[in-house]
Length: 114
Length: 115
Image (cartoon, rainbow over all chains, first blue to last red; front, side, top):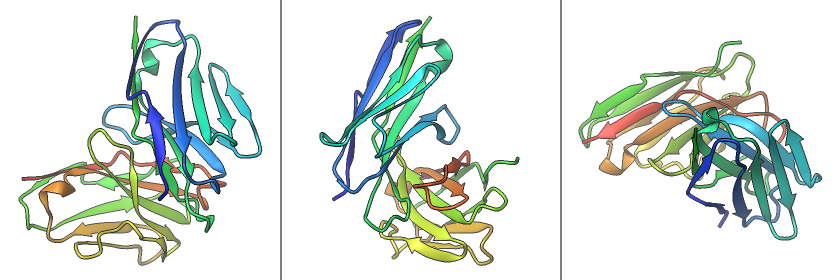
């Protein structure tokens, strides 16, 4: 069935360092890959997304890369700051009906130490 | 603009009791989603509405869960009877259209504890 695997489950970095989170997906029909940030007690918030016709996208300190052949995509955060500490989820569209159904990864808890 | 509103924020019930959650999406958003997020996991889609019609309810445990969006705006999700494994955060999200093309906005969620 449709599945998204996310690694690592926890990540601890020093302020200013880079952080990388990786995801793999199983459905070759997936064409949209968003990344969400979830802070304690809040709902997930979209931080960046990429579509299947693009290999890389960057927004200030955040970038996402997509390798469709290998069915994996990654989130890169540079110059990390304490406020980047949160749980990050990757997701991929699932199913061939184009309803926009999202399959989420298990999440990565990022801790940025001052 | 106002975000997705959910109530209540917290609910504690005993197993076999029933519970209902309410969601008010962002104005003008035709697509509404209910997700279940078990502690330590990513959100899992339970049901997706397009206006007041169901687009996907393949992962909704229909023997105990039900949801409706009668006027294409607000939505309620009900569990009857609740089981211990239903303890989770229930997230409502909305988007202008299908998530492939439009951003999903999430509400703060309702944390359900079943004892």
